[in-house]
Amino acid sequence: MKTRYVVALFLLCSHCFGPAGKAQSQQTSTQSSRQILRKTAPAYPEVARRINLGGTVRVIAIVAADGNVKSVEPKGGSPILLKAAEDAVAKWKFATGSESQELIEVHFAP
Image 1 (cartoon, helix red, strand yellow):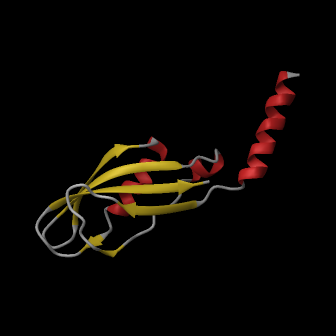
Image 2: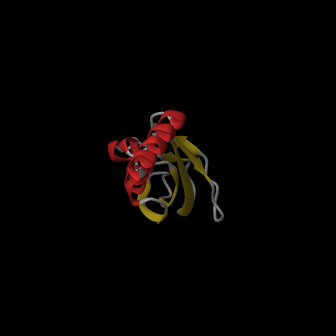
């Protein structure tokens, strides 16, 4: 009986929420707010798609004076989604300025 309840609940949830697949990014920064010139959208991980995982991850991008991202450090969120966010943000291009740290939130919506 318990198994039927779990299966029915799972099917209901998967039907209501549909397939996972959207990733949106939003820059929020407390230290600097450099303009983003080029964004690369994160690829939604296949594992996350299969389990219908969504959420928000935060990364800190260390941006060089020329606007290129030098490194990306994880700040918080699902480890499954963090890698996709780090890979995408590493390809971003910012406006020139002094070296800065940018706090970036990436939203993955199921």
